[in-house]
Image (cartoon, rainbow, N blue to C red; front, side, top):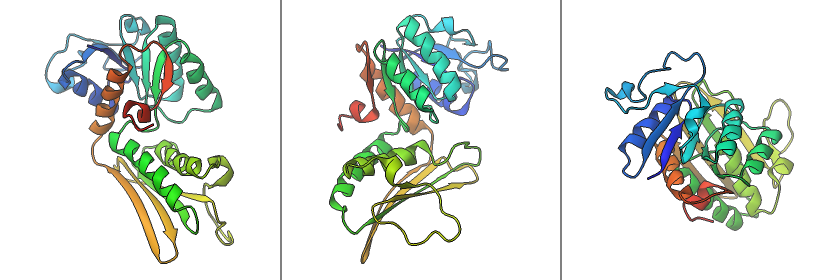
Length: 265
């Protein structure tokens, strides 16, 4: 039974993770962490559900001791602080946080020599299936097809394009034996000239309370193939994270993705 710690316990994603952990047979809630000064500190982690879990929300990372895995969907700076403590304590991690710079990604890779980590731009099982479908589609539609990626998220999202959109672009670029950074068109404005063959275009929309919509368009002569994923509830990320936590059971180190968790690699 994996003993699970959850970061950002009073946030929307944190609450989803707490609820899913308490409802999933074979998983146990070990610790619930929040930022210093949070009004939720000291409350039972399941108070929002109208029940008790026996696990109070705290800000002391010493609570990680004894956990098997920490699930973290916070911000890069917070996740990296948690990563350092998990490395010290030998606690595995599920990282759903996006927006890391090169140094942050390097820190995660280095920590994976000491602890087991699953990191993914998106923990949804459906989205990770889409990554596989995109790889297949890109290999078939590799001549005469233009690729455009359109994503939309809620108005509070602070990064663009989304990590999931970037991962979709990377899936296509890998299938073409290319580096995404070399062929991506991140934005367009003004007189841009004709579209360059072999590039991948991105468009980011923000508004309302959209959880996450992603469409990859393969536009060719006389036809258009679109692969779309739409999230209607954040529970998909929580369920995928718990699946990843169970995957890490018994693993002492290594860096894995949701493709590994789902057996798609």
